[in-house]
Image (cartoon, rainbow over all chains, first blue to last red; front, top):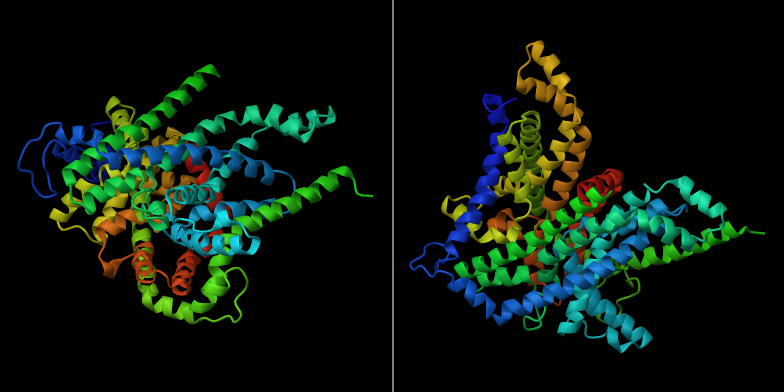
Length: 286
Length: 273
């Protein structure tokens, strides 16, 4: 096929048309209106960069950005440590390892909204009941303040994504040559040594993949946030995606919300491009 | 006497069973409490219900209009995934077989679109589609094609490159059209990647909440959307809410039970590439 073939264009066109209409055109259209007082239907005045300047002194936006970054870093560390731990666990040759894999991965298939509602019950009623049973006061009153709201979101996120990250680590762990491990075992290396000295360096590439996947998931989190805390109490657990949504659809400040969405795009794109850069660099080193 | 190796395997089995049970505990709490009465949930959260009653499920089923929501979810997911598979595989084939610069640019455009998060286009998207009167199921399905095509084309593109061009050429000499070559020779060979593309898109679209919440009306609401309204109506009535949540995840668990091997492999493939 070449550019003059009609069939090239006919094969390409439906997908390209949808992509342009659904992603690129709205993106540029929205970007244009961030320089105005657009209300979703029409714009009357040109504001230049005013919307963008306003963001930097918008305490609510800054709070949600800080909260999102804190959430992202905490979740990334725990999800990856646990995901790797689970991957090592289910690749041991025990009879139930297939069943374990199935169980750990399961939360990933259920939507964030539904998981958020389930966990709302667990935190409010389940934690409370366990707290009473064992007389643990820190298990009571969950989701009623910013601190437990934060940890509630982290726990939910870890529970949902650890199994996903586990799958990624498993596929790298399975690439570790069996002879290498057996040779080490014969030479008297303990299970711990075999992990740190052989498996760990060989699965290192999986870290980059997993780190960035969890990072971009954490940044875009919305459904779980909505279902678990709905940003409360008093907006203290409102994450970036929700803050943008609320600016647009609760306060109907469309041009301003879209300016925040542009900043949001830049943040997410920088994260993704850093990943591409890191991956490319490592490939060269290899 | 038990060998040391055997012993460590037993310990490992016990330890991992405990972790797995902790992992499943949220589902346990959801299910047992869905069978309890409103009052029993106040006094007894952790143990099994004193009496297993299906009343909550019956009421949740009716209030959720569950069959209608299930049908809506099924229609949206099935049609969206179908057109994503058809048009993405076609586009990927065209891009992989055309070696020109322009074709490379188009491929990059598709990949670059993956960098744009949904929240960055949702406001103008809804405004535009509202104007052309497409905030309905058809509009939604079209939007899923736009959002889903990038990753799917990326996956198909890699697979098409693995199929020798000589196959196309041989068929050309026999006088077959591009259309026929693609559907009778190439597409069947893409079956493994089609399974992956299907699984990734089904999981995403079936569970998606935000986009349908902005596009669909109450009447055509999918399961997550209906669940949101239902939950808002029944705050503090956990017995009904939990029964509804249990109903909502049954279809997913059933599917997982039958296709777990494919699902896990598909997700791994989608993540690593």
